[in-house]
Length: 149
Image (cartoon, rainbow, N blue to C red):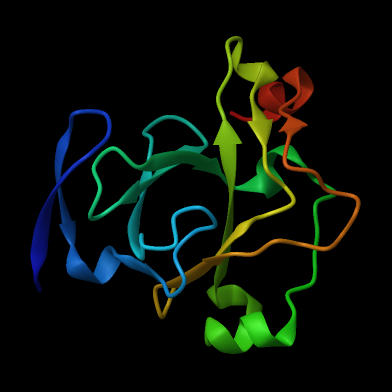
């Protein structure tokens, strides 16, 4: 197994297995040249960091949207399922990119463009939804944060 040493945006040096690298075929919107990221859980929190493998300064805070937005749902169009080689729902992990604010409950989640990950194939894509129920900034509410252990 090949291990890589990464330097993160937060001045950490970490070791990751090559098998943990997520491949974004077309990059992220606005960062089309950035095609490899790792998802790094932040210990003791429901948050993670989506860290670029090639550009240490490029990282995004993310979370599982279903922890904070119980009613959140969307249908993944067939072309995206094919692109990510998704065969069953159990192979899918969803993350949303956060804009962190102080206080934390004022932070927002981008529900309009979730990051969809095929955890088996390590393929990922930020999908822009056409669903008008969702915007790029949904506040994390105090009650939602209170429900999280």
